[in-house]
Length: 416
Image 1 (cartoon, helix red, strand yellow):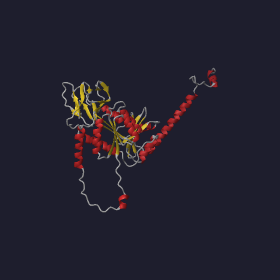
Image 2 (cartoon, one colour):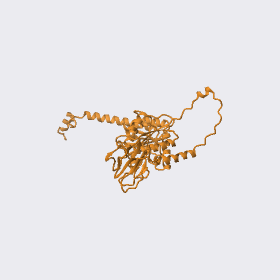
Image 3 (spheres, one colour):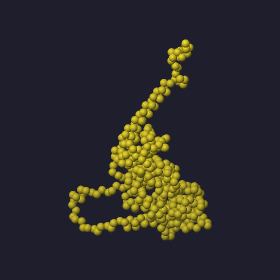
Image 4 (cartoon, one colour):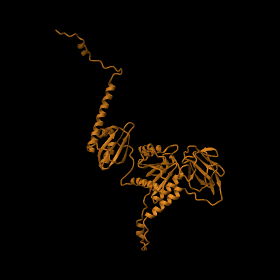
């Protein structure tokens, strides 16, 4: 049996017996192997035993992870070699004693708690009833099709978290989720290209391409995919950036059984909401008039977010009626016309929430016609200005006044 032993003097820590599960090592609570030393990061690295070797992955630690003195991002530790985390040294040793359980806390206790909760809420199985003699034709005429699973992608640089949390989600979903895991952004994009994903849950503390950049890429390329951010380093600034980049939810990573069940319920509600009657998809090119017309005719309630490089605003539609528009300091009809005059940009439909006030009172048909009329007038004015500029002399001097008129003005006037 393999185990990790802390060999730095003066630092009390029990040896930890390893198995084929990913475990995290760090200073903070929640790590299976906790080392209380200031040079060790809260979540420093993660390890997993494969055969007689230990795979070691650094988790963006402050003071680095070293194998035999070499700073590593991912490496293999062999028996007898030293692993250094900040100023703390550990050694991989092989033992013949009986192993102690090495299952991570999140997997052992939380999965057990979730399983017991499911057992208490699940209905009792019906007593078996003797079945009548099967009819050959009827038995093969109407096979029961299994329910479609939701495709859920988790992106996190911690394999230990992916392994334990997704195991729990699979249990809570009663196998209603088909879960995909990606420890890097490129792997996540490869999965998205191969599989239609219903929900992507991202960690924003990723190396190389961080989670916010990945969030923006997925939002643009796969608009039908619901997005959520789940991070262990939450802040109000990160929350605002995540929601602005297309995330529907911003969640702090849970550390308790109750917290994980709450997070699962929120994610399950979000992914279930994506599967409604009707079609979802993306149009390559569409104008705002068409989007608003479709929303109003269908009597939908939504918030249409519109933006380009200079302008950003919102149009509120409630049961097919435009009730509010805002962009910058403008509100009402003026804001609506300003947004509709944007020649090109991006838009996104959000779930409806009531605006602070109602500023638009006209029918949507009149509003669209008025916006189109204003746009046409602006186009004509711009065309006239272009013609005038093109006809002006190159020197920039004003055109000469008519010679006959000049001669009359220059001639002496007879006042008698």
